[in-house]
Length: 197
Image 1 (cartoon, rainbow, N blue to C red):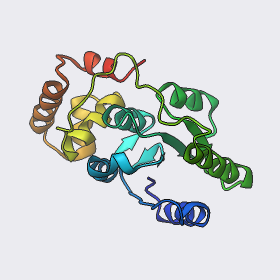
Image 2 (tube, rainbow, N blue to C red):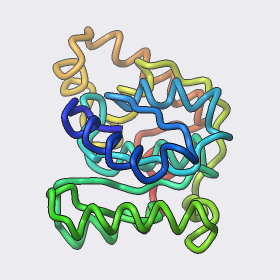
Image 3 (cartoon, helix red, strand yellow):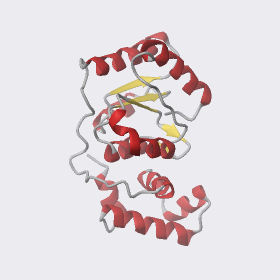
Image 4 (cartoon, rainbow, N blue to C red):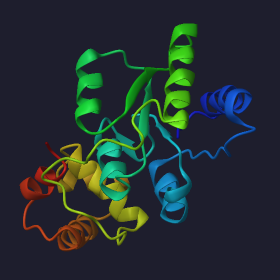
């Protein structure tokens, strides 16, 4: 999933040429759209390509949420960032690979080879185990809760979440409380701890 139409089109064309006759391809422009699709199709997914910067997620929070909700889906992070620290953190959070979408031929080749390895069983058969402190979820998060959770995991306080989402402060507090109930936690620190190694 990627929020840039041209990037998605390019990846779809690239993957379609190599794998189109073997596997169906699907795309999403946001994390919420992808999670909604995965609710019914996760068992069909060979691998999920995930950009770290989508309209409704920032950094590794999206990866963490996908891994929590769908731990059996292998995730390859496709990002424009070439930061080794971020690559290491992505691996710690369960990404099976990290590919820079710089447009260099070597990066594209690495992506194709990684997908091929997963498809043929040479690479990790499924995604790595989720973080030890993680608790299983039951798909009770709606789109707004997912958005607010992403912002919490990105260290936004309620006021910042209200500004980012356009919600009133009271609405944000209600949504945060409902998220705490879903995860059976009492504080932000405890919630964030569920998504940490």
